[in-house]
Image (cartoon, rainbow, N blue to C red; front, side, top):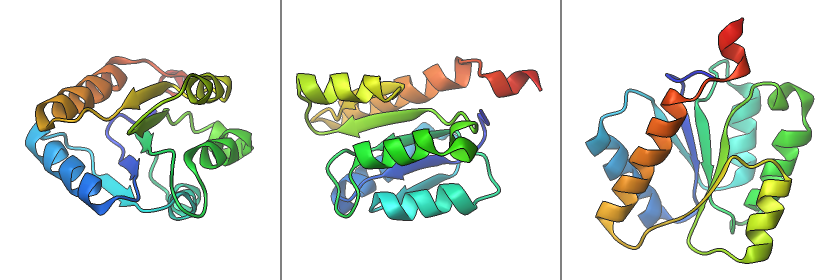
Length: 141
């Protein structure tokens, strides 16, 4: 895991992208944040980039390919799976089935977007700080 690598945000709502951009700017992390409106765009980037992404924050309900389909493609692709990129769902709502299905696919976190700016900021800070402290297999090479 490259703790200085880009943070991938897959979010089809332009307003949510703008709010997240504002929060990441305010929090001052040095990680580049790359935004994608659909999973296919993000998958292309993850496959093609030489950079090792730090983490993926993915919405679930998106056009073309939803968050579960994207997670499955990354998880079952040997090259991408071995990159050990933490994959977290960051969505507006959750059902018990969605949470169970997510963890069955080895998603590393499932977060509901808080309704306030302060809540959103606190959640993003918590997520990033947790993963900055976490140790991954790649750190032993």
